[in-house]
Amino acid sequence: MNRMTDKVAVVTGGGSGFGAGIARQFCDEGARVVLLDLNQEAAESIAKELGETCLPVYADISDKSNLSSAIDQIINWSGKIDILVNNAGVGHEPTPLDELSEKQFDRIFQVNMRGIYLTSNLVVPIMKAKGQGCILNIASTAGVSPRPNLTWYNASKGWVITATKSMAIELAPFNIRVNAINPVAGETPLLSTFMGEDTPEMREKFLSTIPLGRFSTPEDIGRAAVYLCSNESSLVTGTALEIDGGRTI
Image 1 (cartoon, rainbow, N blue to C red):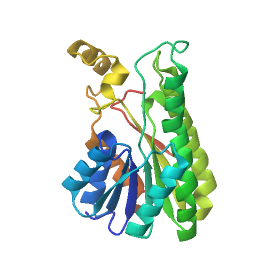
Image 2: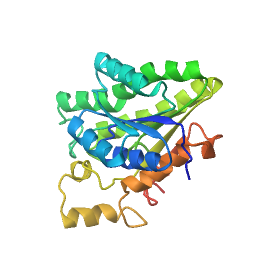
Image 3: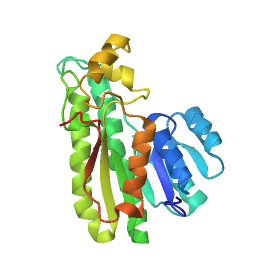
Image 4: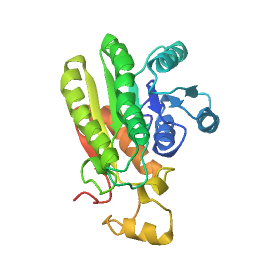
């Protein structure tokens, strides 16, 4: 449908999982897409699949200097950034809140929270100067309906939802829309992390909590991202859209 023709979109964590699904859908709709990823090999593989309208860029989103250099590279390639998708995230295996190591907690903070702060710090001024933009944060049903033994991950995703709403209010006068997606657990590399172990029994137990009876897919999240980042949702800002098969009802 070419709903994103002439748009330049940056997708963090674009080399796999939901990020790759979003990138594929954006390219199908006519966008030029930057895959910003710590795993350069994975990003290059997806970029090769998607063709010359897709650029793989190595970046550690928790490191401002490194990220700033990546943004400069993107501007040199495209001249602008219309859409920022903050998709990169990490989790941890189910662990009692008082037993999770400080190192694991710091990693969750650095990627899930600080990463969004830093990308916004660098990209929002570009959007303000252009007089428009769209930011999409990938949160989680964990931020709405938390599960035990994932407390600090749950908290990080609750932070993303609150940050999304606050960003939307503050940036509306600059014609910058900000929304979030809350996926239920999906067929991505993080699935086994959340479940603790990937066995048929564990999958059945997890699926029993999802009324529609299946995990989310990168395609599900990609289609929702196209809607929220295209002109079809021009009056939508500050929402956290649940793509969860009824999980949070």
